[in-house]
Length: 172
Image 1: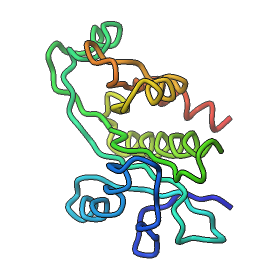
Image 2: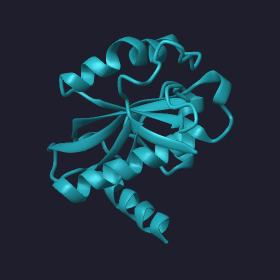
Image 3: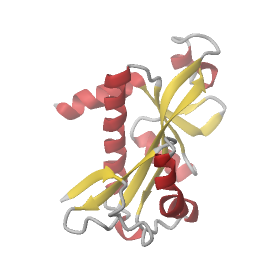
Image 4: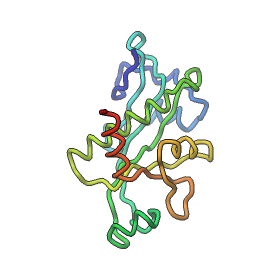
């Protein structure tokens, strides 16, 4: 049975390989330090039968975004040139041997659920942001409703309204 849980000492970070050195290095050398410093939280996908083996991971953090960088249809509803709070999907990766099995979508859905949980606690997020590493990653996120920011086509966001609607649909 697959589960997503916070990165812990039990998890074998050294054998994870998604094919992208920067993502591998972050998980292996930096993720736990960032958690300890309060910079971000990393969550891992594991199979309960092999709980130390990381099948994939994502990292969440917070940011401030200038309202003028949002698409016009969203920015017009917000204060001009205001710094707005948001959640960020800082990283998402799936182990090379597990790619193509839908684990990326599963990780993204779990990240969205966690962000919506944060909204219910704080009530203060504009949306969920991600920096796509390339056009293929951009298409992956757009498939789930992410929208490109103004003048930065690889920076995307999922508006608060879309986040909340997705959660209602998921609950049935």
